[in-house]
Image 1: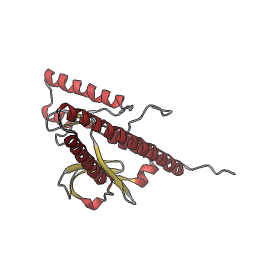
Image 2 (image 1 turned 90 degrees about the horizontal axis):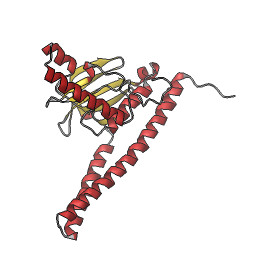
Image 3 (image 1 turned 30 degrees about the vertical axis):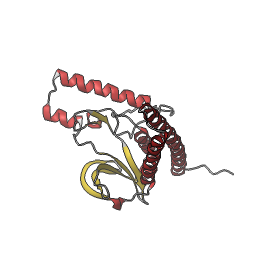
Image 4 (image 1 turned 120 degrees about the vertical axis):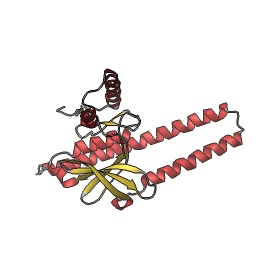
Length: 235
């Protein structure tokens, strides 16, 4: 007799399926992107009038650089690889902290999520969607996911750090935006939402707190915890 799976088991099965789907999808995308980079470089080298030997040397150098970058991405990170700095946000089952990667000195925003709370609150699929969306994003309108790893208790999402604060802070500081500022930010919001839709997702949590501002003054969408592909039973 088949024993019905409880909600925790179901969440774990769905999380595993989602991980495998995302993993193989990302592998295929990486292969296609690498092939396209090589094609474009080959065209540029041919147009530059280089000799076949010079072209071959450039292509070999590209291969070495890509292999090195791939090895760095595949290395298993751990919490000790980062220096903990300032806490910049707290949520239902985690926190966001500014961190510094020790080997490069680069600054990131790290979201730390307690796995048991994610399962208990039925949020595994939402977190997976958030991770997959940010990992797949290759546009200036979405906060990028640079690394993700986990330990026995937590899942860690290491994202680009956007230092300009968010739209809520800007509104509280200025109280009233000029018409030109409103037009500018609304236009960028439309482009950001369109970029997410083009990736096959719905954000579903648009608000000033989730509109980050870069140091150049442009918008980036963040917090995709409620994002969905729109294929679920309930949207």
